[in-house]
Image 1: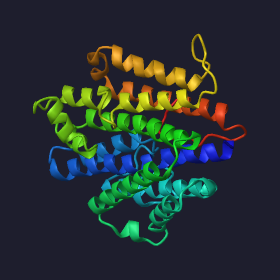
Image 2: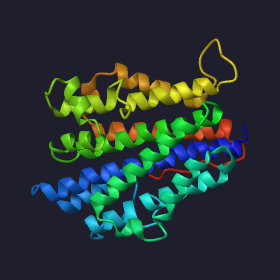
Image 3: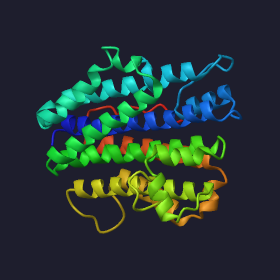
Image 4: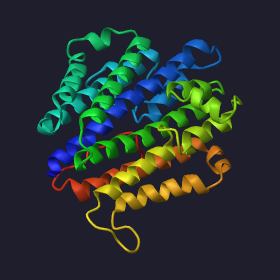
Length: 308
């Protein structure tokens, strides 16, 4: 497969997932600020923007309006949903010949809501739901119309790495806010009912963290995303190796997944924000390794949420 096409499909997977998960994280935080009188709005907004990789001046006033501008509506903000959907559409345009007509039309229609002003005119809860619905439609069409060839593997690889990264950000935001954030975070991931069935109705912060990080069967858990990315890389291998991993991305993702599964959960819960930042850095390094190996001559698109 041409490296240009492979790279475009990889980033379609990442950008669509990023838009959806940003909407999920915003949904959690906006609900908490509105419903919990004990939450300090400015502190919560600053923490959220920090976790999402948006740099602010130390004394600049910040509130929900500015958060929505930077993370949702402003197409000039690289971390916003609007910018991410535009980037997904541009990647789709570069890979137009490999996409089904229905998938291209779905992505193009989604993007058209940005320059038309339709997306900005939506109230936040409506906007979040719209983004989730459009992402589900795009992913559903991809599942129904794409052959399971290399192109499909790159699409799922990008989506899986991004999902692990963004779920870790949602876990980090829940860890630095009030205890009620865990239940809201589970609902934002569509995980609340699955979590209650797994833990027999017992809702605890530790249990929620364990489910979102380590559950091997829930598709939005960090471990599930890392495992799926590993499987995609295995399918993309041209030949097997008898010792170790020649694929650096596979080694990075496999080591992180093993650490999550075999380390004590207490070790992670003790300092979740730092542990999640380390996981995000691994996802960035794996992306660089994938770019060097498969996208010859192309520069990887940076995700600015990772701090050195």
